[in-house]
Length: 152
Image (cartoon, rainbow, N blue to C red; front, top):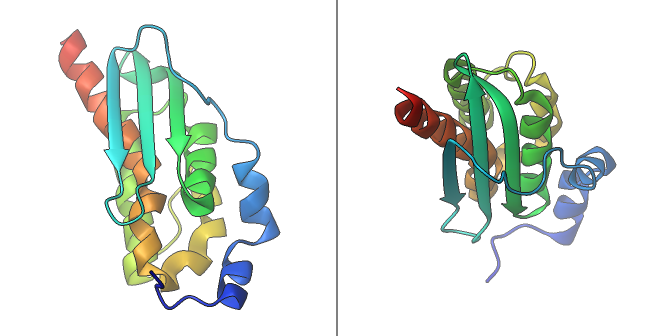
């Protein structure tokens, strides 16, 4: 099924920088004993990200992610994974909301340490890819919320 995206457009979208991120996704895999775990799936493309976390003092101390996504979803997981250790749920949720606004409303790039999401600005024009791009932060935020409940 075609989404109206030409091969030339996809080549521009999947820039070398995005593809480089897909080759080096931090914290791939699963944690042996997570306090929180969440799986998010994009119904449109079938991409999935599962995030596992262990918290210490309300911040992510250990993080792992299983990523089965398109190049844009993988690039997003790489940015999220690089920034995840030491983050609070509020910081992750803020990054998720800022990323959604960046994609959907032309908003600003998420604040540091999630500023590398600027690499995905070209994806704004590809609304059918937004859900996949948001999966990593959605799964991480949900996993942290679950861990907070488990340790309360």
